[in-house]
Length: 325
Ligand SMILES: [Zn+2]
Image (cartoon, rainbow, N blue to C red; front, side, top):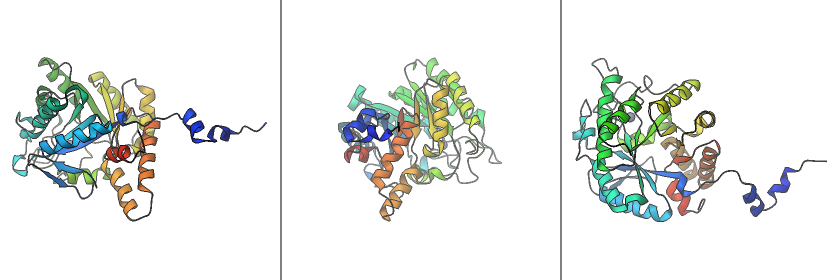
């Protein structure tokens, strides 16, 4: 007897019956770059994504909600004059992110999950994710109180989830403690648990204006050659109080996503990062690939490897072009 697997592939209905992986709008998280200035401006290397003021962001979120995209991740893009060596404007109660969080929660309440990025790189004049000394060494422990304070500001504004992406050691415990001491026990914490250093974040840095002015991030982000290191750090983050874990970039880390899926029961998020998105867009413009189909296959692979949710710049078009529904 020949085992004919193709019997289960004979029609779309049959393939749907046995499909193992689902991709729905509820799995997708829409990133937003929020600026103090009104209106919006294009980000050349992230086609279709803009930097926008609070009002404009509200309008976009309202449209996205109609598509079923009910989770946003906000990155602050403060004016250059608000940047300083210690990045202290990240803790400003009247900063653009607390403003945006208050406006979004007021407008959409429990219909929308609002997540915010917690990191100093958008706010420091040197562009590193933490404080640095005169030699340019990133000061892990001195950075923790600032990150915790930034998270508290967002929690006070009503954010649902804070997402520290800075990669300082011990920041999950520091943020959780600061939130709890101040009564913000309901604010969830999504930790960027595995974040590899490298070339995958180029267009994002244009969007968030957050490139390091000297050196690189290899002393605090992970070495792409390592897998066990990431799993160990991810499990430590759960011990420190992370409610959910993030892995980025997504496609180069499907092995880690799968292994982390086996190692923890916590919900897992993968960030389909800017270069993953933009390289598909660029190749599509050249006519070398079918961009829509390729992007869809990216997202399916990330789900299949174990991601419960995906941060992606492709969510809006995925739903609008009916790759998913
Ligand atoms: Zn950063």
